[in-house]
Image (cartoon, rainbow, N blue to C red):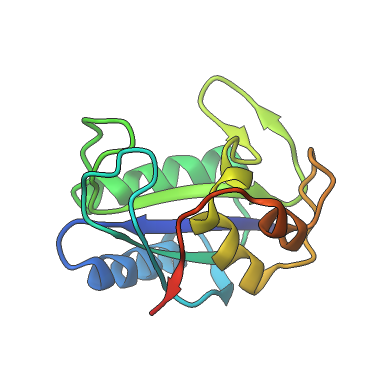
Length: 159
């Protein structure tokens, strides 16, 4: 059984309902959610002139490979109305694989661990809630240490 560490988020429409719908789709199409973080609200990162995001992290047990999980996540995003128009722009839902077991994957369509996760409080804070001792397979630091060292000034507020 594989463990996928996912981050979900969005800042358009009914943000909470979108997270709940994504969670339901992940459980029915990918696998069992064995741990979930609280929901956090954070100002937009990168492209700041947009509404705040709600984010949540999950650990999902799945029989699928990382590439199969990615394909399923993209299909869920599309079914929920995600349109990729502007990098870092507003979105109804964003579903990302942060880690997959302790694998390191660098292909044209998938990079695991997520390449920017260590720079973003909105990723590290919910992950730290559910997997503080997980060791980043490339950086060789725990999630907790990455969060302590993170220079991102944006606050994550538990909802």
